[in-house]
Amino acid sequence: MRTVSGYKATIGALAAIFWKGIKHYTRYPGSFLLVLVMPFLFTLMIFAMGQFVGGPNASLNFAARTGTSNILIYEILGSAVWMTSWVVIEDVGVALRDEQMKGTLEQNFLAPVSRFTLLIGLSLTDIVITSAVFVVVVGVTTMITLPGAFLNLMQAFLILLVGLIPLFGIGFLFAGFVLRFKEPYIFTQILNLLFATLTGTYYPVSLLPYWVQFVSGALPQTYVVEDMRRIVIANQTLVSMYGSIFILLALAVTYPTLGYAVFKIIEKKASATGEFSKY
Amino acid sequence: MRSSKSSRRRRVRQVNSRNTSPVLRLAVEFRAAFLKDLRSYVRYPAWMIGEFISTPLWFFFFALGVTLFAPTSLSSSSPQESGLNFFFFGFVFIILFSTGVWGMGQTVRNEQMAGTLEQFFLAPANRITLIMGRWARIFLTDALIIGYTTILFYVIGGGLVTLNDPVLFIFSLGLYELGLIGFGLLFAGLTMRIRSYNTISNLVFFGYMILTGALFPVSVIPVPFRYLCMIIPFTYFNDLVRNAALATPTILPVAIEYVTTVLLSVCMLAVGFVAFKKIEDEARVRGTIATS
Image 1 (cartoon, helix red, strand yellow):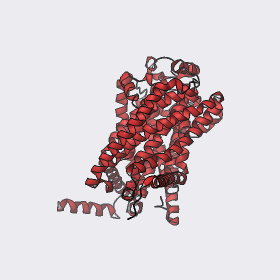
Image 2 (tube, one colour):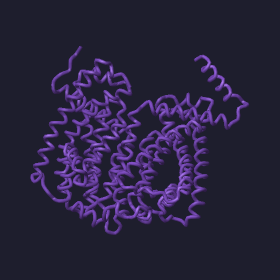
Image 3 (spheres, chains in turn orange, red):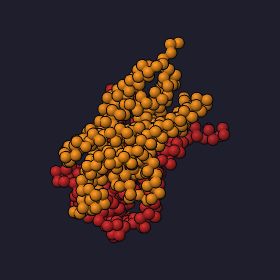
Image 4 (cartoon, one colour):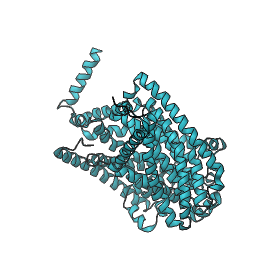
């Protein structure tokens, strides 16, 4: 049997997995469109509900609690980061389950490609998808409502990219759990909702009880949302946020390592018990 | 064991007999469909637990987001005027509406995906009764989830949930459900025609949340878009149920709104039945019933 090894083979495998993911998205444009539209719809809902509750002073009340009167940018940044984590958890976490349902998981795992390459390949597609979310959702909104902050978007995008690394780690962790416990869709829903609630998607994390803030501190999106708001709305630079960037980098090392280790343990058990073919 | 099997066979023969009354037949079919769906539901306990966790979480997540706009503590205002009470009923509407979109519509889709839709449609039973069986199961579990969320809300919100007129509330909720069944049947029929079912149901769901006054009054929506809200039947269903529960002002004068809502619910039910049958007949001719 011809063995496949070396960096060229790895790049080839990564490219193949990446294109497969892109083809999947282009084949179902409706779901991609939904990813782009949902942040706007959620923001619109929160905005309208807020206007109803706050009445004529809604914007003033909002500014008093958040420090900014730019409600749209504040909320859309939260929505965009939430959608990013939604996409990663759905794609990386649930992809193996989909392969299991289609009966192609065994073929994938029998291919002479390491599991790490497989998981990274799945993640690469999401870099493109989340970039599209950033450009369409954050880029367009900023250009229309806060053109002065448009140049800051590159820094905000960098934060988002760094934040994707620990998120991929969470995706690996989730992929392992899905292999073991099946039924990923309800777990995905709960996880996405927990992320939205805990990471300050539509409100500052300081609004949450103290012990919940402690949990929020362990989630990368909390820092991504906060930093992006500081960059776009408060005109701060990456240098001034070195503390949270350092935490984000630490999480970028911790989560993928932990996620992959758990994934390998579960995979090893699953290969011994024949769990791969069960669904 | 043998006697129970033979008695079951006897019952099946009885039900399929030409002499059996149509009402009894429908009741037996409905019971069978309900039990089938209930069994499928309890077979996946993770789903059950997940639903009980995620539903109140959605509510609290949005409620937290909205508190940023609130002038003072929401619980300090009177219960009838409280925004939280308004949202609470909004979430009840959303849970109920999901029955039509992801409950009844999804029945056909699930069978389609599992490759069992043909068997389902070949069974000597009324398709609509089979779909209604699923509706009944979801209604039951939704009622449990709403009850559980109400208790949570009561505990956390300090007794904010109010019901101004229970009789009118049940009546208006009944009208809502009739309309919803009609809508659900139409949606179940559409699953036989559209491929991007999830995308369309998500968009319809968002449309419902934004345009029907479920989470905020339609008066918040700017005028050109408000006209769109006014032609959606669910706007009136939501408005009437909320009026019965919280004594909020109605869009139309109350008596006219009751008449309008009764007419709408009857019309929607009729349209749902007719549309489902028509789409099914067309799908049979085209051979697209099981195309997913």
